[in-house]
Image 1 (spheres, rainbow, N blue to C red):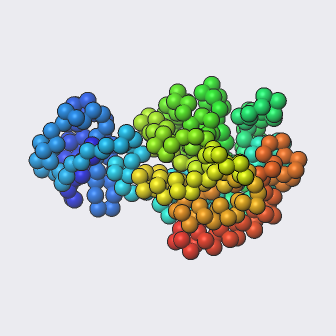
Image 2 (cartoon, one colour):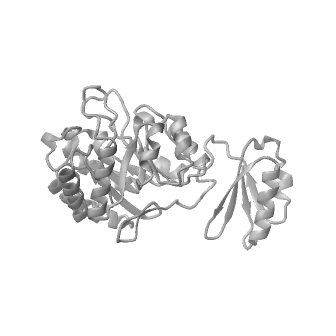
Image 3 (tube, one colour):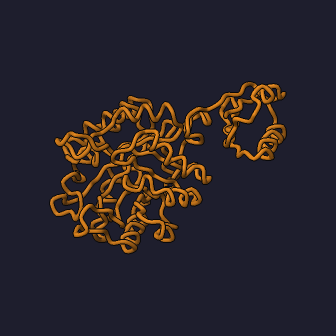
Length: 342
């Protein structure tokens, strides 16, 4: 249920109303816009007399929310959420609300020379953040599984060298202690419904990049984000990375329609990962352009200095030179769409 308050209501009266709902056993989410303040009432509100709430002096209107996702719902939070990620020496990288971010880097961290060199190259081309896998979920147990804690250390070295915030994937709840100094924690497609992990991340206070599962609906995707936000962490970035269909020409099928749908029903930033969606380097540019045109708030692109020798996903990675060319065209399109590169 959402309670829309009248304009000009002072904070004391708002807090009195919040306390009233909390005494009834509900949790209350407050959203202040430029002209409107909304209270999102979370819990079984079927026993609440809507007309009695409407009669309260400071209340403009009351509406029930039928969707199962509440805190991620745009009805609860009409304004776009803007997530700021501290960037060494240059303010903060922002995602959402007209701010466009590009996250780039290799699928896996392989050694210090590799990750630092790629970090310098993608930063030069305009990347906002550096991605790199330290813990790698692989279909085959014989494939490279990542450098684990050593990989995280190398990512921090690259951050120190370039000032780029780092984005890396967590695979298991037991690894959470290793991510204290990570800027953005990524939840991969295979862990989208690892609910115990999502609940724990809801208490971290760190930005969480949540990827859509291989065969999950948009509503299931939003409910996973709800798990994180219900724990008190409002810093969630949604990532569309392609879904599994009957098509075999591409690695996955990019659900481009998910971008405007997510932007319509949720206030959270939405980015697209064209690398995993396509699995083909020549498709990254057209899918990136389509993502910007569809309203995405950012991109996540795999870049490797020698894709043919990459220890994982080299076949879908582009070189720094190719990334630079793509970024030149993306910047122009982002500017045309009225957004700002972070």
